[in-house]
Image 1 (cartoon, one colour):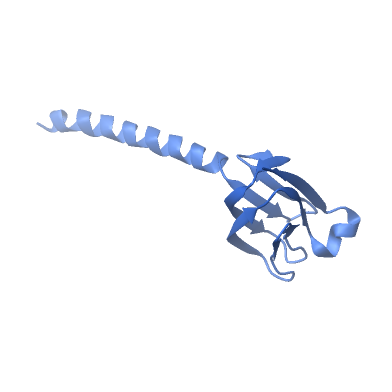
Image 2: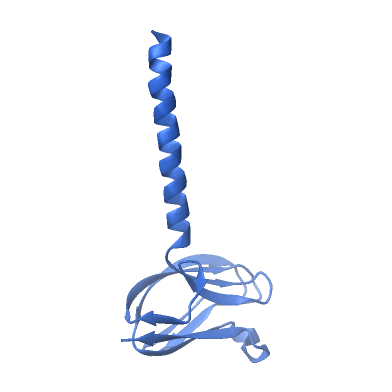
Length: 122
């Protein structure tokens, strides 16, 4: 009787593991993310790739500020959001992106080149 139960349980365990691995990979590779630090790097990515162009619309941007000496500041048409210098944080913003150019930067280090931009199209 125990053998009859072990095979279905083993199959169930393998199936659940496959689903969990598939979901983890998909979830990790999608979405709009911003990251600054811990070194002198700042970036915005969509589905794991550097963002260059995106269609106008409302998005959730997950921001990871990994250094107390930096901040993440997003500026564009009708948008001005930033994290604080002096702390680290993880936050999510709902942003409405309108056609135009958006800049993301670390305010204390923008003049040193710690910034980037992307274009929003209609």
